[in-house]
Structures are given as structure tokens and as C-alpha cells.
Length: 432
Ligand code: TRP
Image (cartoon, rainbow, N blue to C red; front, top):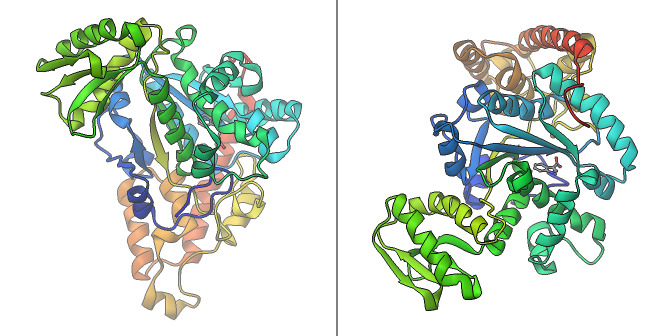
């Protein structure tokens, strides 16, 4: 399996994907996870490095959230899923940053920057506000010099082989496209610059197709850190520093901090640039590493903590593939009239039997059905009602026609409410 952020396909086996890429399982009872059906139902199903963010959130410590959008097509229910998460974290007090990936859209979709700008505000931001987002940092990649500067600074640590391996870039990839991952790394890390709030655990909630960007960014954090915690090849855990003449002083400060965290069995080997922590366990590494960001910052480093990321499933399209703005019948747009949305649902490709008798015998496969996803992801918060639909579909007693009619009704109700909030949506509090 491969993950291509610019050409993701329908994903059939999320468990395999999670295992193949070494993602963690984001269980509904994970520390710090907000309430809400997307989390409870494991639609947000995996993570990379959740622990420092989840712990800080649960402890009421400062946290940031960073995500982005490509303003390339109209906003649909797949996009809404991300916003539902962002809003849930914002309500818990997380500092929210949203990048309009206008440079990425220009580079990979050939869209003019000024069109991206107008569209992002007129379409996305309006819907975000109608969904409940309150003022936060909503900015354009092309206009935030700190992001661009960071992208350039980080680019020193990336060579072409790495981009080839991560993204399958080749000799024909344009430099604009090749720059997109670096700008995204700049997006992800800039909330931790002093002027944007300083080092703090940052969550990047995204579709799982974005994971290559997170792997790149985490590697970059490791590369620019003057001190970090890791497990060495010989199995020993320690703080390792590369700070030239400053190494001894830096490791001394790291030692003090680690002692405060409860790791007291320390052995300092300045020659190796190492402070071994012999009472630390592999499960402690992520947490210690996050804390060492402050020591890094106080010794002239960027002080970046590795970002935490969470991944949601990509919604199925109504016409079979994935939900995509480039295929209007595959998607329910937030601006679709209830009637239009109902028409699309009626024609959706479901998994039930073609004829009544056949359906009674074989039933459908709700977990592979785009209409069932409408309920599970957006329309039905009540788990016991959802279970009834699921079981009725699977055992053949609940028919696709009825199921679509009910989904269409609920969807119509949602769209009506949303669109009346849209008419009132006030984006004045956002500085754009
Ligand atoms: N690449 C993302 C997309 O295609 C958009 C994006 C830009 C983003 N910068 C980001 C996502 C930072 C998360 C974090 O949708």
C-alpha cells in the first residue's frame, strides 16, 4: 500500500494501513481525546505520537492544533469531518491554526493565488463559522513569512532521495510541487515559534493520506534539535546532544530537567554527547523528548516538539470511489439544496441485494456503504439507533430504499439548519 497526499484512492483496509505505516491505534478512551461520535466510533482511528498532546490537553496545559485546506473545490461532508474535530478541540481550549494551502494548490492544481484567496474566505471560512468555529489563526501560506522562512531553514535538512522515497517524486516533478511538503512542515511547526506561542504540543488532525508530511516533519524536528531523547541502537535510552562546545552545559541542563521528571539514574558521557537515563522505559521517550524541547530552546535551538497527529478515515463517495469535489455526484456539498442532496443519496451505490428477496437473504455490508457512513459520520449521534440501522442492513430486514429515504430526510434537515446559519455567519473576527 502507498499513501499519496495528492492522489489518494479509496482505502480498503485501514487496519493493514495502520500496521504497515506503524501508526498507533487511537482508542476512544485515549487520554485527552474529546467527546463526540467521530472519536467514540473510531472514525478518527489512528495517530502518530498522540501522547504528549493528549497528556497536555488532559492536564489543562497549553496546546496548539494545526491543520490546513487546499482551496481547490467546494466544501463537502468529507471536509466537514475535519472541522467537527477542530471545533471539538477549540472548545477544550486548544489554540487553533488553519492554513489555507494556496501555495500548494497553485503548485499542484494550477490555481491562481488570488482565486484561492477569495474562494477560501467565501467558501471555506463561511462554512467553518456556520459549523461553530470561533476566531482563530486562519492564514494563507503565501502571506505568512514565518512559515516560508521556516520552510527554507528546514529545507537544509532534506535531500532529493528523501522526497523520492516519501512521495515518489521523480525527475519530472516541478520544484513548486517539491516545495509543498516543506511549506507544510513550516505550517505545522510555526505555532511553536516564540511569536506564535512558543514550544507546546501540537496536534495535526488530517486525513490519513497526509501521513507522509507528518513523517517528514517529525524527522525534521529530530534533525534540527540540539538535544533530543531517543533509544540508542544498544537499547539504552538517553538524551543525546549535538551542540559542539555547548554540549556539556546543555546535557547538564537536560539532566536537571530529567531528574525533575523522575529519571534519576543518569550517566553523563559528554564525549558521546549522551546523558543516559537508565530508569527510563521506551514508553517514556516521547514524553521526555517533548520536555527537552524547552532545554533545546534555551540553548538557541528552535525548541520544537515533534507534532502529534491523528488520522480520520476518508469518506466514501456516493458513486463508489472516494468523496471528491471533482466528482459532484460523489459528494454532498454543504451548499447543496436539500433536494439536490436527496437526489444524490437516492442514486447512491449501496451494498444491499438488488431485489427484495435477494436482500432478505444476503443483507448489505453497512461498513462498506456510503449511505451508512452518512449516518455514522454526520447524521446520527445516538449509538443505539445507529446500531439498529447497522444490524437491520446486515441481516437484510432494513432495505436500501428506506435507508436512503431516512438518510435523505436527516440530511435535508441538517443542510437547512446549516444554510440558515451560513446566511448569518460572520467572519469579521478572523484576521484575513
Ligand atoms: N496538504 C493539505 C491538504 O492537501 C493542506 C495543508 C497545508 C495542511 N498545510 C497543512 C494540513 C498543515 C495539515 C497541516 O489538504
